[in-house]
Length: 161
Image (cartoon, rainbow, N blue to C red; front, side, top):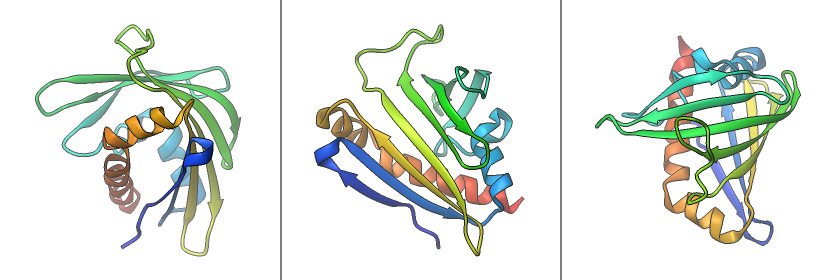
């Protein structure tokens, strides 16, 4: 079984996440950049990701929520900064409300997501940067590692189909 590898860089307030997927780079890229596919894997089960609006381009955004099994909604907004198709994108990710207003009670983070071909598929290398060590610790305490690993397993299943 392929594992998601987490390497904290506490001195620089970063969390490095590496994962290889059994899928061509084009398929893995699409799964990370098209809302119809993101919705099928992004949320750890039994949660579900639901898109309100997605505009994948530099200056665009993905406004979505995680729908809990009890009907609760956890809203998020990813603002896309840089996009190099099939290679890399960066985005500022923050918790927000249904209207997209930032929730200042929870930390935001900057994602740098890189894609590279491997013999067996595609390696995705993610560096998540935080404003402070406390912000990084808060996100980890909220279950980031467990949730992201579970979502990666969802993506494995999607790529098999």
